[in-house]
Length: 310
Image (cartoon, rainbow, N blue to C red; front, top):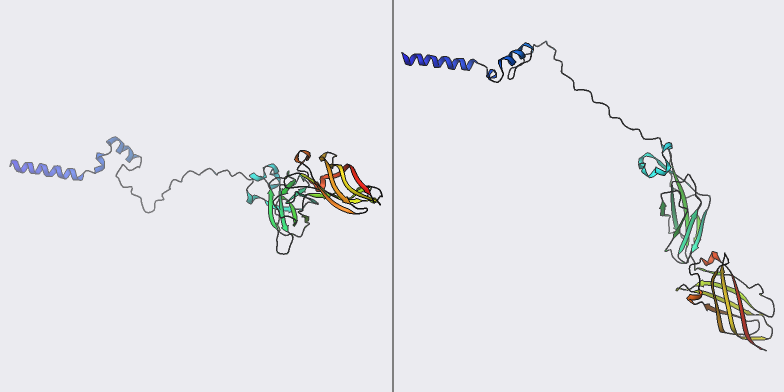
């Protein structure tokens, strides 16, 4: 009888235990009741919704629109800050200067210069060597409007080149065309020398005159003067110069070089002509980098000669 009562009690305990929801062990009685009263299911409970009920989902809070800073209008972009503007924001347009100056410097360089223009934001220089087999090439770009000259170095000697200079600016809704129908200028590399020509008294009887007075530099930077003399005397055989002093001047009247040469042999018959070359010492070449073609303008000489009457 005792064993049976014990079995009945155990069976009742098992039955009661299986009938209690598991959520009752996880929620306090007060919280569970409170949740039920407010229509909120306790943890582990199923939320039952009738078929015709409308469920309103809580929408996420609206995001604040991100402010997009509009770029300044093209016309308002400061030209000095042009390089800070992205390439896609403006269109380049070009126009050409009224005149370009070319100046041969040394024997393998040409100096290109152009006028400054406040509206210029970029300058491009194109070059073409003379000859049908050569085409235009971009050789230099300046990303500013302040540079107004450039020396093109290491060119071929005694060669003709064409140059075109283009100014660039930007504009709205522009069309960029790449053609070379505009003006271009030409220059030819040649030795850095000048022929200052005949002496003032050339052709007058009774003197030694100059048909040519050619000034140049040698490879060591020394001044070289080549003179084509003419004996203007009727009956004098000119044996030599006892001395011949030569002065050479630039366009500002400054001495490029000066030296006295002694005992210069001539051996010239009446009305004959003869070339003589005078190479100055370095110490007497006062200025070694003068652009002689443009900046050497004058000379003077002083001499004493020995002759024989024929």
